[in-house]
Image 1 (cartoon, one colour):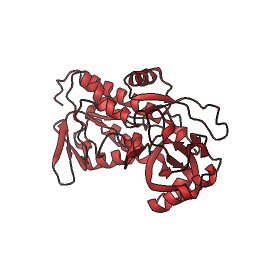
Image 2 (tube, one colour):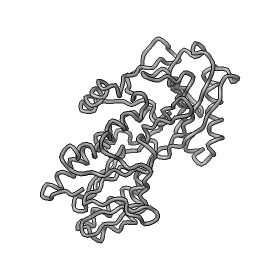
Image 3 (spheres, rainbow, N blue to C red):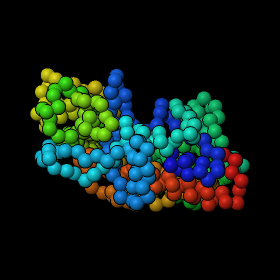
Image 4 (cartoon, one colour):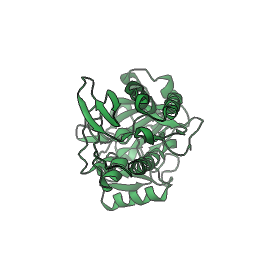
Length: 339
């Protein structure tokens, strides 16, 4: 989204294809009945001055807000400040794509490159788009599968670079995270905290939705599983995971089971990248990568209790999108871009 915005500002015509039904990805907000759940990233962190400046601009427009949750161990204390989208995390992505006419529910099944043009096709062989420059902002395994099927090496001068990139994508790893949506009718005073982080067990973190700015969802909680637990139970059913995380939340929070129930669970298979790609572009092939797999390798090893440890993933993705756009502009400096 950031790459598309920057290229559009530079005067390029850009086509955005996304298999999702709407903006978000891991900044998704799931609507259930009258309420919502930020079931991906519940908050994001910012360190880079440019990203902080961008968030402040979104705050001024009413699309973002700072959030400092109360914790169970010290309800009156504070934690490092985070940011949330308003009225949901996906507002940050919606704002970036505003006016760009993204095409939703468009799953790219195949890529082909011929005569210097990339073409995207769906599973039925219908062409979805064509352009001389391609930015892939998807997880490494999916990017590798598309590039392998594209046979881009047939028209790429730097074949060694492409092979090296494919090897890097094959070796890249992510840590998963199960998330569960949970509702309770218990009074708010029964849980005088906004963020619960148990020291061990299946549950790594629980976030109170109503505590975030611009959220009316009283009684809504998002539960994030421990990464090691998520990996062990990666192929379990969503129903069994929701029940397990709900039980762990009730045990840790002290809320009454009579007034609570889980709604559903969602598996984030590519929740947290481990390390970062060394190679992110092949200008000779008009190919550029973006996403939180690109950037400084700030999380190179070790375990994390929750996705909270990877709070800078959104910043990495934002910076990578901007970098991909600049690389596109540099590669196309001698060309008149058509799309």
